[in-house]
Length: 372
Length: 132
Image 1 (cartoon, rainbow over the protein chains, first blue to last red):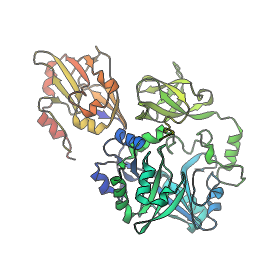
Image 2: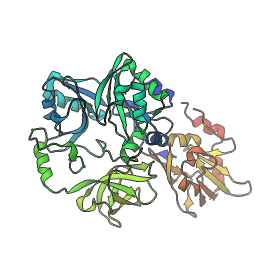
Image 3: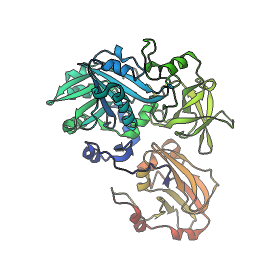
């Protein structure tokens, strides 16, 4: 038995503050964007179900945390991101994009508006350096990166809000979805937000490294199952949340990726990529990021070719793919020509020489039960 | 990590195991080891050839899809595939939960009995498992 495509390791990796805690829980580590990250603990599927059915905790300290501060901060951020953050009230967070002049997506980010003109921007680890350069270029010394020295935990699942409210207190319980706040806790300040990347309710916490262990222990003692990057990927894929570097990148635009909600054009404000996006919005899409569900057994994976049934031409390659533990079937995403992107269209994915029938469906693959 | 390595089985360096069903027959059962299932992670699907397919020792004959990766299965011996474990269609996780028993993968009628002599016994296989 030999694994295909084992990710090569090499180079010095940054270790997590909670490394010893992860080892205690049986973590298997993998290199990711320069970090040594927990890939899994007891197993991807068990961790996936723990998040869907109860609550899981992810150490996501690899995500870069950049700050822009001062009275000009909102305007400065507006000039480099697609979403009109000047309309974002204090205490709220919103998804946004960094685009290039062609309208291609250089990264997807979450922007948090905190009191006293302080703005936090969460960058993907793989893009952290160029993202921070982008902020530095417009904000100069008003931009700072404070990833080292803090730990970021994502607590996700139907029991996440109750757990976080128990651990952090009434300050958390009062938050609404996409609210953010700084709470006093155990003599320190914890930055919390009702955000996440799993399709579940939950929150994310940023705390100083000196309080990372006590927060982690409180969450685990309260019932959170440690969950790794493996489960994070299956969860986000089921929720049809794009992963930068896979489903969106510098050659894909927001509208074809279904991310128009993160682009504000009507305020007329100038930002990098605006002209290209104005043009893109006005013309019909030639392709769309479509969502494919397998109609037979098999696992479609990123990079696999998509064809029309019986056809010879490759119409797309999967940008992401995998086995959905919740649905117990193969799922994937691909940029399909517009004529093929309609729900109900039947296609085939080439799984190493075998044609796997798939159907285009409406996103997401998995939606949490309304009453949960 | 302590991996189960039963003494009564034969092994390959690729982490498959082989059990002779009965001393009087040339039929064997094949699966992957405890170490292998731990390495590959949660098994979600197995792609196996039809009954009657000829297998060649050392050549890939099927694939194991796990939550995180896909791994090839190599034939420990040459022969004809006479059955695959139908339980795995609905419960592929049996490969993880019971790698040497309910999680067996295929049965093969061997064609070159001498190939069995090249397989590893439990002690020799144990030497190949990295200390964790």
